[in-house]
Image (tube, rainbow, N blue to C red):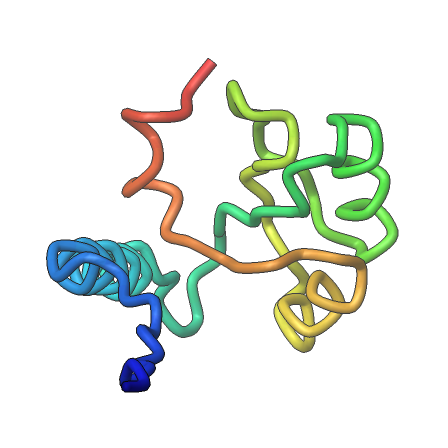
Length: 110
């Protein structure tokens, strides 16, 4: 008599699906609510988190954006980009995303 061999495929726990859905929905809601309005004069820009304040400030300066203030996180700056193509230049300089500065003011102010 031979034993019937069944191959068990590893499965992740059912609660992990719910946790993944929760994290993804939180990220989507945060990105929508923190998004900078079109035509905003002042925006908060996030550079890569491993950048220091000197790298973030020099990147913003290379995009001709006036630095309004720094925050408690070195890679997060509040700037006034150029009117014409300021956001495009900031993205080319390394900015990952632009946010409404009032939305992050309470959390990341110095």
